[in-house]
Image (cartoon, rainbow, N blue to C red; front, side):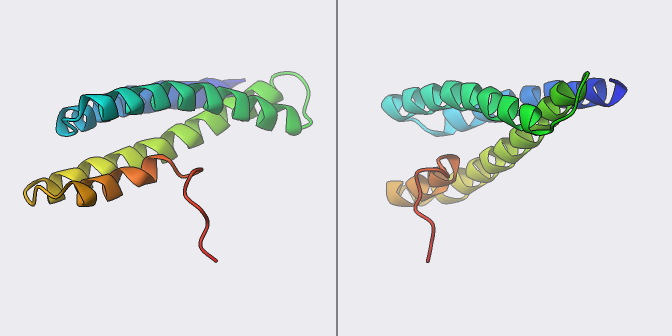
Amino acid sequence: MNTGLIYAQKERTLVAELQDTQRKLFKLVVDRRLVHALRVQEKAWSQYKVAECDVIGELSGGGGSWPSTKAVECEMNLTSQRLHRMRDAVRCVRRVSASGIWDEKAQCLYQLAPLAVPLEK
């Protein structure tokens, strides 16, 4: 149970960092429709994360608190991955903002939709 509590605390810290990074990104992206779409996507991603990690917890096959521990570990890992992508997007948008070329900024944001981008063969 202690492990689950440690994971939960780390998850809360990561979520706070993710929200802060999102605010930075939303300020950099001036298109209101795109900001709205990113907000909707983030809400859906949060719901996906919980559902995905519930499956992972159940797949652990453990008893007692083990499924919830594995689920919160999964949430922590997915949030960490999302934060990494979000930070990369912020850095990328800042880097290309000086050029003013939207296509380059759009490329920065594709990493926030990894399930929609086809795998390379």
